[in-house]
Image (cartoon, rainbow, N blue to C red):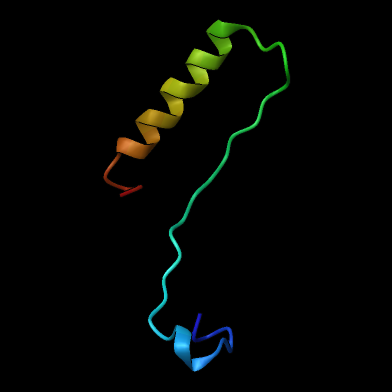
Amino acid sequence: MTESGAAVELKGFETPGWFALYAPMGLPPAIIQRLQDAVAKVLESPETA
């Protein structure tokens, strides 16, 4: 926040990172599960941590 030129009162303020994964409505449950499994595997990897 400081680097963005925000007010001094916000010095040290941190924002957590987040992401979203979108898919078309009606996606078959098997495909949704496959995507969930793949994302979980990536998030558990040391490279991602």
